[in-house]
Image 1 (cartoon, rainbow, N blue to C red):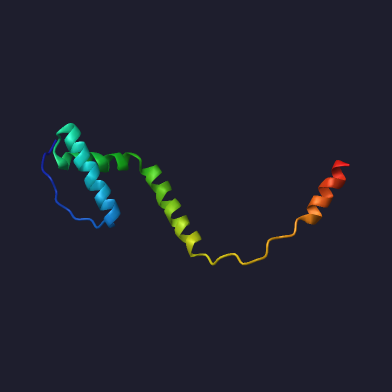
Image 2: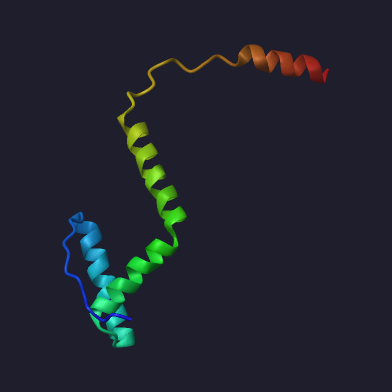
Amino acid sequence: MNNATVRTSWDLDPGTAVQLSQAVDSLHASTSRPRHEILAAIIRAGLDSQDAVETRLAELRLDAIIAALPPDTRPAPDVSAYDQLLTRQGA
């Protein structure tokens, strides 16, 4: 296996970057493995769970679509007619 490393750059939102850094630091402290190996293992775990990642991304997209919808201003329906039907059926 080739032990060469490749340096690349990715942009992350600040919250994710902080969580990733904390996870790498925690795993480094508990395993004493080099940080580049830990980061590779985290990425491999995500690659091994690609279906779950895809599902999560779809959920995030759906959440964004729902959040962008205008509020529902329709009046609440009157259910008294249904209540009357139910009491008639029970009699």
